[in-house]
Length: 394
Image (cartoon, rainbow, N blue to C red; front, top):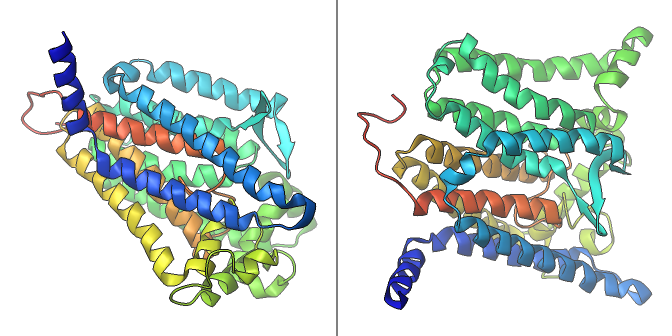
């Protein structure tokens, strides 16, 4: 028995995807470093700097423990409960609107034992699981009408999250749906027109917000919160309101640009230390990295993400089992989209959405959801059953 257990342990270590795990841990280390820098303060509040980092490291320890625990369970067994996990998530999303804590105009969190829990982070994982489960062997999604069920499965959590409101999470869920549909075999002649219509809607939203008709203003207030409308205008022309809606993106661009090639040094970023950067430990932490580590530091961080995503795509490419492949595709798409939007908004490539940077930004719920997705992808990599099939998804 001891020899068998030893062989199992060696096999587990050999099949474990160390590259992905090490990249994630390095990103967490970078995050803790810049959370420390972004929390710079003096005097009686100096303890905040250390306390926030300690809290994030505690979040990381809990997340890694859950990451390892999930690896002991076959991902296909987890998949059997996909619909139950999805259903519970929908209940939590509905309850948070009724019982959740309202912070900075949004109702996204439950307070549990002194900690803030964000159900929309769980919804990201649940959506990938339920879509992978639904699409794994079905063929009806290859017709236009067959796309309705996966669209509905996505629309329900999106609708609830929009009410919170949390536009950032919604923006990363939509690419996940299309990527998983494409990987499962949906026809491009159906997907491309839908994507084109969605892209055409973006300038239409901007023009709609520009209309000053008293009658339409009531509709605008129902569809878009004032701060969301302001962010759209700031994205198009931040200089129009430098001290208001354009303040965040202007100071972010100054911080990244002033970092130069090698940066100003850890803790020496003036935009960061003088508090010109809003939310520097969460939404705009990449701006702090760009200012203090410069172009080289920013590229190093993006390179770690690139390695992580390439490993995930390699898992998807090598996995013939449909459920596992779809999990890998969904996980990579979600994390990559989140990185793109977060980095993009700090550089005025995307509107500001309040989206965290995976593994780096401060926040327990975000860190946990990222490690759960990583665990599922590595789980797929470690357990690839033989599938007798002529071609994948055919």
